[in-house]
Length: 459
Image (cartoon, rainbow, N blue to C red; front, side, top):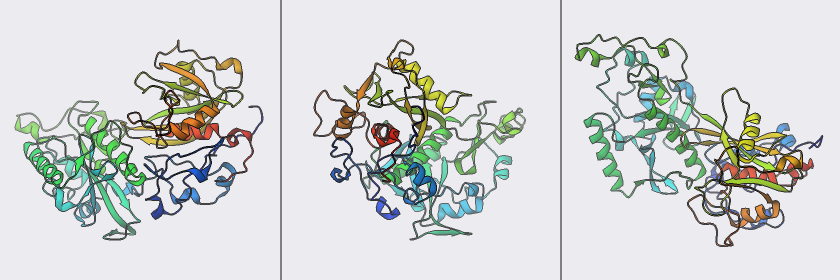
């Protein structure tokens, strides 16, 4: 691309009318019609929304230089996580019993919902049979000292506070809002715990709610999707780490569900005639990555041809017919994001890249990935030759002309298990929906202003 300046941040903000916090809760987005370039006047608002937090609309020197930030589905939660309060047990103890507090209930990681587009948030009165009122009355040090692996509590995770909700809000020091927790109702723990969980599930399902059983849930409004993503990722991590990865003994949930610790003693050992002290474990003496939630960085890239007139897309065997997406893969240790993009694209498609530009990111709670989106380009047509001989992960990879991709954005977007729109012509290209970062990257890559250096639009 020589010395042509890249307009790093441009993306059509086709949902920019949702400027205020309150209005964005009801805004919906779906592609309705494109001409040769996206025509904003022809868009119809339906389907899951894309986040549009207030900071996106704020003017700044960076926004004027690089364009407005692209915000992806599952991000921009309405909750202030207040992570420093996770160890403040008096706050947590007051929060779980506050009448305004909301609990997102999960069973085997499936969220309780009124419908596929509306989560159900319980109040303390509905879960108090399983959530002890004194669960946070003891400090973390006391909990560790008195640890008994025979006694169990359901996994409870503090998610944060919605400071925009003033009705029935809780105040603590200088903070005010509605607290949110995630609570696990899976068949785990003692028989008594399982019985309480079953009773709660039956009572709530009798009200018409149900747990959304789906491989991937992407039908929720943006705010609820972000809350669910945080809850699911943290709950999944806790469930996978109930035993210490170093010594193999049971672990204790701490920091309101944001940490696992390996207690030095266990009263259950004394009941078996063993010393109460556990064998030494280095997770107790060093900072350990086994003790904190993990997020796996993953790259995903829209790749442009040397002339900028085509885009590289691939498909795996599990994709529906004609359904293609951007290429993706995990970032390996001691590898930069840019190098990971170049490696993955070469390994999967045999294409050699030059410039790589980080575009935006998307939390992906299946189970706990951070999708780091990039736009990349080939500098020499000789490097565009596709080869699937290196890594057999893809069934096919192709260069698609921009007009064909634009038509797919207009008529062929859908989730993996869903049919395309009514205007779709059988046999045409299909691509992921706007709630997927792949769609946002494709939009950005094919827009002529992204690589032209002409930043005439500030949408």
